[in-house]
Length: 237
Image 1 (tube, rainbow, N blue to C red):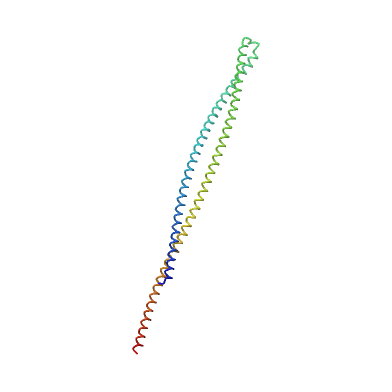
Image 2: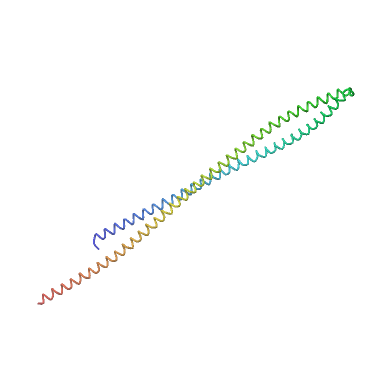
């Protein structure tokens, strides 16, 4: 084997070592990228769980407000029924009062009583007017609370949709990273196959070279023996 062949083999060995080191570094980088993605995934899951808890708390608060609103509506309905009953009673008393007015000339002695009844009915009417005004204010307040609940629900839906979009974007990024990792693994495997092929070709060429060297040595030996025979024959003559 000549010095040039040895140098070529050394260069090939160094190149294969460099390729192996490069593949090792790429593999380590892929492992680091995978660990980083796992940490990011864990962090995102924690953030998602926290947002879900916040959303559940807001939903519970909303349900509590809805229950309070329903209770106020029931109270309002009860007051309306009471008011209607009082109005009916007032109408009955007004009818009685009108009858008493018509009988005023005959029932002078009952005049004071009728006046008192009239004053009482006026007070009841004023009370009913106040109650009706309060009910109108309550109705307006309940309407405002309902509108606020609708706005809160809409905001929660928007926040949920935003979180879903962020999750979908992260899933797409993860899938892209997985595809890139798979592509790098395929390229690494291809390089390993090419390296192994080159190693096989190098070994085969080394074997062929050794065979050629052996044949050359045999030819040299044969030529040397024939030359010795010729020299011996010439000296015998």
